Image (cartoon, rainbow, N blue to C red):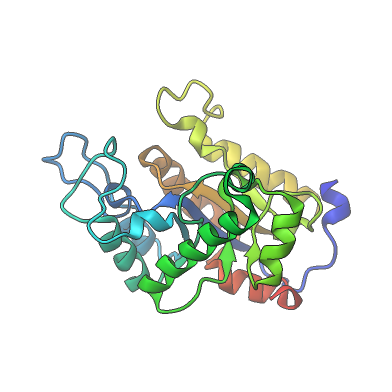
Length: 255
């Protein structure tokens, strides 16, 4: 399936679009100090140190002024909106992960197609309030939506990210499975998350695919994998770009 999809690429470069879902989470992006109950390093500082720009697919509701995110998450003295603005200020890309983060197929059942579209539109408006421009890309929660909704969103100008094998491999998301490493992490890929992602990349390379959209989440447990992956992938000749640049280089006709 992968081999069949690995057709001639527009880009001859080895490219990585590093993306993160489910934020903005201030304690992940900005870090929690040593004095905090659960100190965490700053993902944005790591990206800056390694000179990497990433793309963040954010939940619109988190961008509501005064929101610190889920009450179960560690809290620092910065809001989600503060974290998103800082990520954007540092040159990272902000894209749409819907407003509510409810799976769109379920939301369509609950509120009809118009309700699902309204949720996507509201998410886009919240992103625009941070970046000043309408987001280019939509990643649906869990990549799940009906084909009819996907078609109608595309006619409205949304470029939808997917893991579907119907698309060429270079346009499909690579699911890192990092969410399996959160909590008790009993299902976390072995021997490590970073090694599992490198295996996926190596398999794609065997089929001639050297451009990858890597999908992670804003989780403190993901940080060690990113810290390991960036230098390893750079050593293999990869260049990190935002999703917008990736699409422009890999598939100009798709934009």
